[in-house]
Length: 422
Image (cartoon, rainbow, N blue to C red; front, top):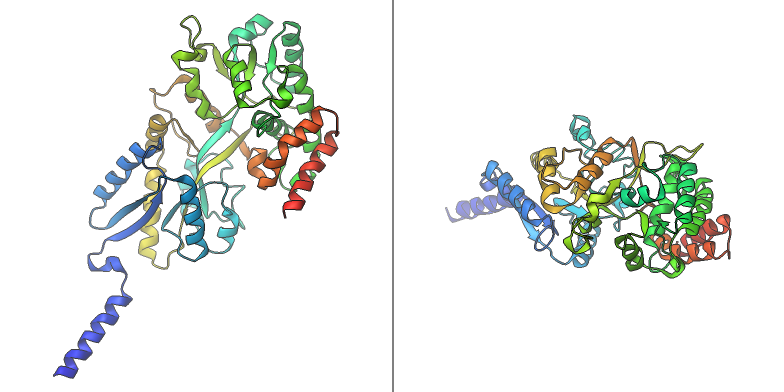
């Protein structure tokens, strides 16, 4: 009898080990380490979304959030867990991760079949192109940032213009007219990380080279042509731009002595601050959103420069039921209506196509409209190439503007940085 009892206990233990942990109560647990907690702007609404999802799926699916308030610590931990084969059920990542490498290594779930069922229609055109592997999508570009000019209509009127230039030829005519009035057409900076100049260079590269400009690295002729155009822009910016930083570019823009501004959507809130108003008029009241001018003979009309602030990727699952549960949750948080509310509450932008809330400020609404209507999008230069490019870019721009290298030399300098870092 004792032997029979012992054998029964052993069998029970074996079965318990073989059955997934959630089988006891049929509740599937989704592990979600998240940085969208604490003071992150997306935290309040994400918490509401997860609570609502758990309530709707009580007893069958439960999302358990592992709060991570230190962004860099979260990055380091996620890299370690993915490398050791313990990928969380759902991951938040940015472009600092080897997205394609992890995808090729089979770390992530293939989301392509679900996207092909119609889910993919909710995302911006071309959102997956740069990140797919052999035509399959393993990581969803989710939170985005777009980079498109914003211009001061009051300053434009002072210069004698009632519209934003539609082409780069027209753009430089505007620059000449602005210079004649003693007004800076654009704000450039070769100091610090040369952020503004990197963005302008990215827009010019997109306008010339189009959707596939990054297909062969820096070999596309668009990169050399764009360098010449960027250099020409330095004739129409403020004095000292060669050593300027973000504070200088922003300061000139806020002082209303620069006509066109280029930065990420996170800067929009500053346009609505009372501290930046003049005579009670908000800067936003004098601003309009523009499209990247068309480059004659270029391939970029209808395109947009963007970057991925956050990807969503899921661990590859052996259990079909858990895979379905994880996909169900991802679909829930990427639902256009939920994304619209998340955008309103956080000020962030997303690759999901959504109608902005009427409560959203007008500039942000227009940026969303631009994103939704783009024919395609490409990453900015820093996002498209290894970090060696972003590190070298300020020095390369300085050398270009100072005449130490020509346009080809500028591109060669960036390529050399990539080669040396490899």
